[in-house]
Length: 287
Image (cartoon, rainbow, N blue to C red; front, side):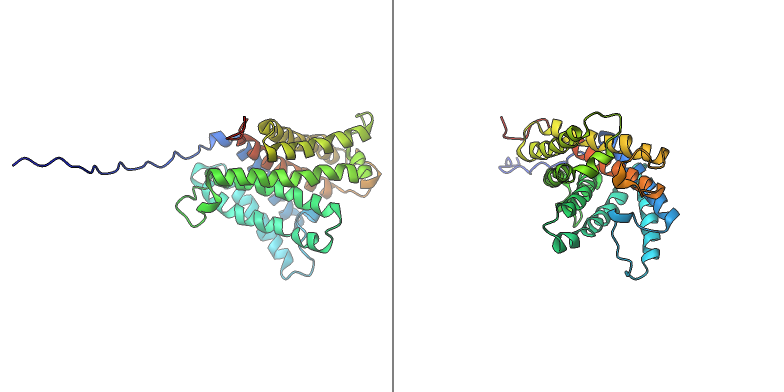
């Protein structure tokens, strides 16, 4: 007996898209890990949160204990990012932690919505969250979990837009708070007000470029490099010179502030690097 030919062939099994390699996310992944470990060590030394960048109220129950827990979590997750077998678990832990960190700045938006400085503070942590979200979307391996909505290409795109929106008020602060900005610019830069406006306009241009797809990769890398330069040209010398390179606005800056600002700038820059490394030269559909 001859078998009748099958009219309906079984559908071929769809292969899952290959996972993003850790190598493709370097050096942002390593920079992010180093920043986390540095922040954790600093928190362990002082038994406290990261000053104004982690504004946990003094009355909060078990505040000191929570500060140590936060420090240990950052050190542990930072170390775990260096190993392929633990990277996804570190990122799955970090993403909600970064969301909570970002939300510490939310009350200020409600209390003082007309003060540009609160948008600056929120924006700095938004860059950090965008970078962590991008790394999670690429390496968190969340496709088969309940957090699949926060992973994949769509999440990479939304984290990019999130960064873009919030670097605009960061740039605007350079022009609204000209004196503090000028007090951060190294003395060997001539015409400090020019640099204050240039850096502010540069960050605004980067945000708009990313939002509207105008040379988006260049815009993302310009932002990442600019924040990196803040860490290397302002806050690293502040550590080495005990704040003597800073202007009168920061006359009371101590070594702890300099270390905290350096590490915060470092990890925020790493977040911007993560976004930049995953930004295309042209958005789909753009000519």
